[in-house]
Amino acid sequence: MYKVKLYNNIAQVGLDTFNENYEVKEDLENEDAILVRSANLHDLDYNPNLKCIARAGAGTNNIDIKTCTEKGIVVFNTPGANSNAVKEIVFAGMLLASRDIYGGIAWAKTQESNENLAKDMEKQKKKYAGTELNGKTLGVIGCGAIGVQVANLALRFGMKVRGYDPYMSIEAAWNLSRYVKHDSDVKDLYKNSDFITIHIPLNDKTKDTINKETIALMKDGVKILNFARGGLVNEDDILGALDSGKVSAYVTDFPSPKLVNHPGVIAIPHLGASTAESEENCAVKAAQETMHYLQYGNIKNSVNMPECHMDFNTPFRICVIHHNVPKMISQITNGLSDDNANIENLMNKSKNDIAYTILDLDKKASAQTIEKIQSIQGVIRVTTYQGDTL
Ligand SMILES: NC(=O)c1ccc[n+]([C@@H]2O[C@H](COP(=O)([O-])OP(=O)(O)OC[C@H]3O[C@@H](n4cnc5c(N)ncnc54)[C@H](O)[C@@H]3O)[C@@H](O)[C@H]2O)c1
Ligand SMILES: O=C(O)[C@H](O)COP(=O)(O)O
Image 1: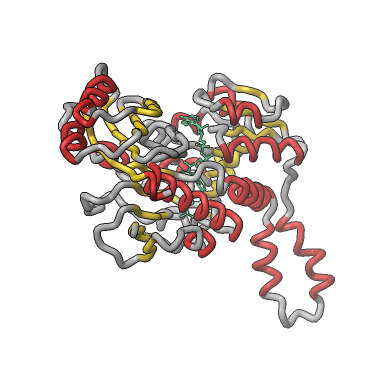
Image 2: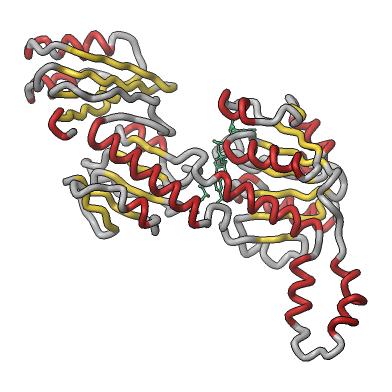
């Protein structure tokens, strides 16, 4: 029986994905896997049995990836599974930033006993007038699963679109409309955009991407949208720019006490991925990733380990997480020699400093052999799988 510990509410359809060999709940000890959304796992008390963490969502800044890698814990996310939900809310944000729909609705709610409402509202409405998206320029920083969808939809709104992403994947490039102007220098995007939306992960390099200096390069009256992470935008700098009028609106999915009452801030309580559809997509994908790893050692959509998966149809499988250094494969295969086992299939993949090797054998390896492989310098974790778990 595999144990999967829950750290957030996970959509039921995702929980139902696990079969009878899984115990899935919040209150568990010695778990094999963790399923999480945005709960902070930085202070996790890692139990030695923990093999993987699946983030039902995109951002993994709530997980200590470095420690997980050192301990041989595979961290998964669910790329693209919530991108449509975020794309849609970004447009809600752009519309709210362009027209005072929110102010108008708030006024209408005060008019319950106004007999002359029909007449009064025609006088009042000029207070809430705004501008259109059509014809404006949107700059998209980060053209991944979300950025590409936002860019493509903006074109359909009649916007001109510019995109900046020096690390764009081939898949994302295939999906991006050719009508999106590619900015190889982000300064060009800053200088020419009426709206700027940011869709990149938060890490040490991207923290405070939007700051005093970058804001100074932008058009006067620019509107900034942040549905990625709060830490990407320096709060003091954005508040200063709102006060001076340099920035005319800041739409954020990451409210903070400092931001919420500023008139230029539209703060939404992290609702970007909170749709039934995206919660279900993420939950199912995270559950599948967890099961494929726990049962077969197959890795798909990991942020700290290489993509490595192979059909499993031999009696025994050994999976080794190890450092990406010379002579590892020869040492691992030599380690098997005492058992006289035949390696029927072998796959080795690497990602940065980490590598992963799957060896499928014609018979079970002995406990001594597994210990020998585990003791090779550079090996982080060895896991074995029986063919009859299929
Ligand atoms: N508000 C929400 O509910 C919500 C939902 C999903 C994702 N997110 C956030 O949005 C982020 C993006 O999500 P995604 O699904 O599009 O991820 P993704 O991995 O598909 O795309 C991220 C893109 O950012 C690019 N990038 C990285 N660093 C960059 C930099 N310095 N400058 C420009 N581009 C850079 C990458 O090359 C990649 O193409 C996530 O990391 C997460 O933090 C928020
Ligand atoms: O990174 C993400 O996927 C989003 O921020 C969604 O987070 P949530 O699953 O907690 O809504």
